[in-house]
Amino acid sequence: GKDFKQGDYIELTFDQNIEIVMEKNNQENAFPDQLRIFYGILMLGCENNGDIKLSPNEKIVRSNENTFGVEGKDIVLTPVYHLMDSIVWKGTNYKKQILF
Image: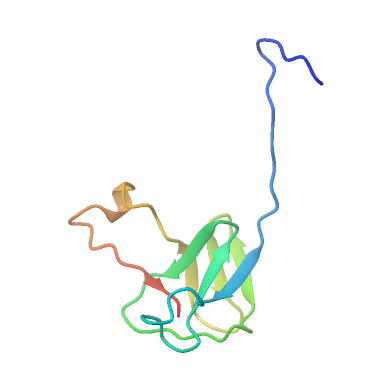
């Protein structure tokens, strides 16, 4: 084993992949063919006013560090934020659709 001393640090890197997951756990409340899109452990969603439906065969592409898109479609996906994040506080009119 390695003996660490004060000032040493460890840097970890993880590969994160796009994954489209079909909903199987909540069949009673789920729509047929309901799916979720993840980048690593982050669930992605879309800020919009209408419904969006995608197939499990869509190609999700990374646009930049925190933004993803659906190839051939004008859809922008970003991580769904934690409720403690200031972007979702009352009065900000924040809303995000989880794609099903």
